[in-house]
Structures are given as C-alpha cells and as structure tokens.
Image 1: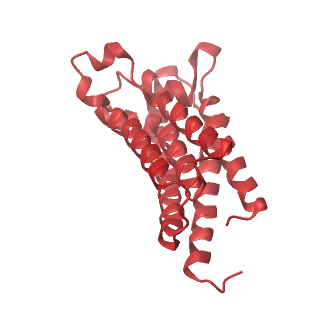
Image 2 (image 1 turned 45 degrees about the vertical axis):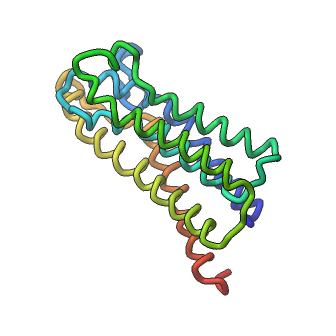
Length: 209
C-alpha cells in the first residue's frame, strides 16, 4: 500500500500537470498571442507539423492514465475510486477534436487523439472489472505504466514545443521563452516518473526502504 506522504506527492504532481495545461506555454508579446497548453495544438494546425502537433494533446491523456492506474487495487465500492476514474475520463476529453475536424479532409490526423481517449476509457472499464484485486504483478504493472506515461508526457510535448518555439519567435519577430505552463508540465511529469520508478524499484526489491 502506498504511504500517505507518497500519495500526497503523487496528487500534487497530478495537480501540477493539470494546472500547467491551463497556463501559458508560449508567452507572446500580447494577450492574444499567449497560448495555453490546451491552445497550442490548435494554434499550430497550419504549421505543417502533421500528426506531431497532437503531442500537445498528450498531457490530458498521460495524466488520465496515471490517475487510472493510481487506483489499481482500490475497491469499486469506494467513492474515491469512482471520483479518480471519473476525473481521469473527463480530463482525457480535453484532447477530443472539434467535430468539424473529425468530418473534414484531414480527419486522419485526429485518429491518434481519439485512440488515446479510447485507451483511457478501455483502461477505466478493465479496472472496474478487476475491482480491488491486490496481486503483486498488478502493483508492478501499476507503477510501470505510470512511469512510462510520465515519460511520454514529459518528452514528446517538450520536443514539439522546442520545435515550434523558434518558428513562433520568427513569426512574431521576438525571442520567445517558456511559459509557466510549459515548466509545470515538465516538473509534474518528471515528478510522476521519478515517484513511480521509486515505487517500482521498492516492489522489485522487497528489502528496500
């Protein structure tokens, strides 16, 4: 069972990721040119990035998966279990494309986002079927998936932002930096990855304290 202090650190990390997605990533010179994490994917639609721009929509998916796997071993009868899983599904829907995009000529570019949301819902359903089982291998899967999701949410959005930032700087004729949302996403996913890796290491080495 995860210690209360560790649970608090995970919850803080999850919160940091979510808050960061609603803060400015690209700090432009005026309010209309400052884009949240939520807006970055839409703003870069016409930059020729292809499916890579969907990487800006990864934080809701990776956070949702982390929230879901954090509930592995929790009984279905607990209010907390349904709260976490409900929030996870709701957060994943932040990546849902606009209906006009899904029916437009470039609809194939949005399939990965639909697949990500579908994966979240599939995991939520499977965890409900498993219920509160506490088998050792489930615990290892739990922390392993959270660590991988943390890495994906850390690396890919960072890479695509680093690719977009120079272009945006040239477009606005101003050297743009990194907004607070970018840093919070970096910090939150890094913390989740390290915490999960630590828990996985402790499960793999029973005598480890």
